[in-house]
Image (cartoon, rainbow, N blue to C red):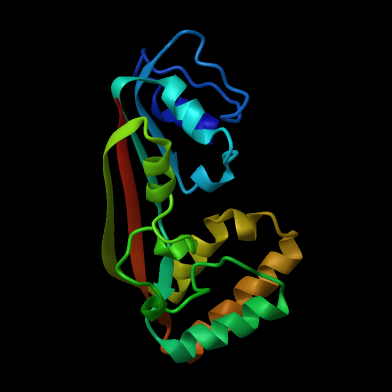
Amino acid sequence: MAEVLRRNTVRCPGVQVEVDDFESWRPGGRRFGLLLAASSWHWVAPDRRWDLVHDALAPGGAMALFWNPHGVLDAELQSALAEVDGRHGMTNTPHGELASSHSEVPGSSLGLDGWPEAECRRDGRFTDLRAVRYRQDQYYDTDRYLGLLASLSAYRVLPADRRERVLTETAQVLDAHGGGIGMDHLSDLFLARVW
């Protein structure tokens, strides 16, 4: 990912890419206007994350945390895909849940009612807390959906022969259900500022 960022910012001389985990990284006296975490905040050590944000952001600086849960619109298709996932030990796939299982509450897909908002509010060093959920229905034909799956780390880390079997069986299920999949894409965004 760092290499992709370097390529994409080659014409931006002010961009410096540093590779480290957030707990080990040191701002070196720098303070930033924005901290962005995409589907990763839950991996930051809970006992340190708010201190790390506070130390990295300049006064008035903002943090933006987001997640992108998915849900399958068709219950029968979701069940058939869950059988494929189960046979291959796959978890946390984009088709792992039904769209109807997601409430309207941002962050509810994380299973922690309002997190990270409640956690940040308890910290007390942040203001302008805001959580929003955006929804968009999307239809993928079989080939396009397999392309999406093949790009995800849960599939990429599989040995090539196992990945091919999972994708082939997924394609068979999709083709048997009309040649594609309707998905409800959610984008949960949490915003806050340092005092």
